[in-house]
Amino acid sequence: MRRALAFLTVLGGSAAPGPTTLAWFPVVGALLGAALGALWLGLVHVMAPGLAAALVVAADLALTGLLHVDGLADVGDGLIGPLSRERRLAAMADPATGAFGVALVVATLLVRWAALASARPQVLVVAALWCASRTAMAAVTRIMPYARETGLARAFLGGPRGRLIVALSLGTLGALALAATGGVRGVGALVAAAAVAAGVAVVARRRLGGFTGDVLGALGILAETAGLVVWALR
Image (cartoon, rainbow, N blue to C red; front, side, top):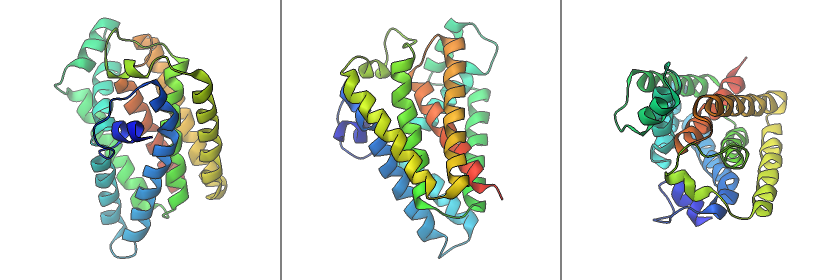
């Protein structure tokens, strides 16, 4: 678990990821979501909803070390524009962020803030969405091929399939159980998150030939955002 915590958050110290790290992704996601949900619930009692939402978004960025937002920016540059596969991968590897990446990050953060600012705080629903996003990340590494010859995400390849399948199954059931505490809308939020995660994976498969670490990060943050939007519906 420490390796998953170190990879997905700024906690856990220095630990290189490995194939068995993926099995702990759902647990770390649920814990991170529960912490952010609890912060959200506490803040709305002492300040305006908009400010509370901004601090929750900032806390998420801080706890994840901007890892997923960095992936989102790279995916914006690599997947949105009309490029060849080689140029898409090159754009995603370029440390500079282009207009597509900036626009996608800004729009996503604004939507996350607006959803949190207008929704009723629910700790377990946030835990469900963050658990589901990390479960989807881990699942994609087994469903899709890796699109690069080298890269950090290559460390996840291989490893015992049985253990990961059990972890993904428990993560899915756990996310569903947590989301159910929010009633029909909570389950709807989880379904929306899963649909967006699948959509990002399909686009990456068609345009890149598989996944990269950036795709996993973007998939996660976009899935969470979709779930928050549905949770915020009136």
